[in-house]
Amino acid sequence: MKRYLELLMKNRYILLLLLAGAALLLLPAGGADTSGSGATEEERRLEDVLSTVEGVGQVGALYSESGVVVVCEGADSAAVRLRVTEAAAAYTGFGSDRITVLKMKTD
Image (cartoon, rainbow, N blue to C red; front, side, top):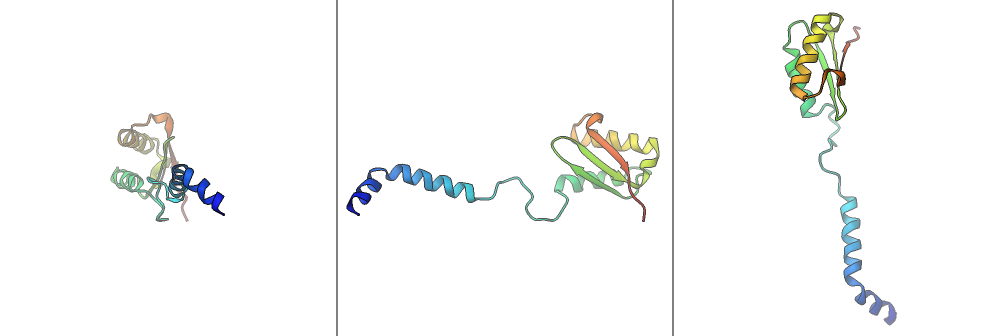
């Protein structure tokens, strides 16, 4: 027992570093939306902007690092798809090749 205590005291800084590292691993990662509310603030802002475009109707958006998917009622019109793509490109900075506009399913 005495030998273990001596070993612990000798290596206490290494042990403290290991404990601090383990504590950091247990903390939730910052930046992720862990609230479970669905859309992020960026997606809500994009949806608000796109819903004001003429002919769009209801709109939903999924925004990620790799691109944007927009689902809207007016996407059957090429002119609306173009306006939505241009607005999403201006808002996100993505090129049109990373923006997809799809027709919203009607019930």
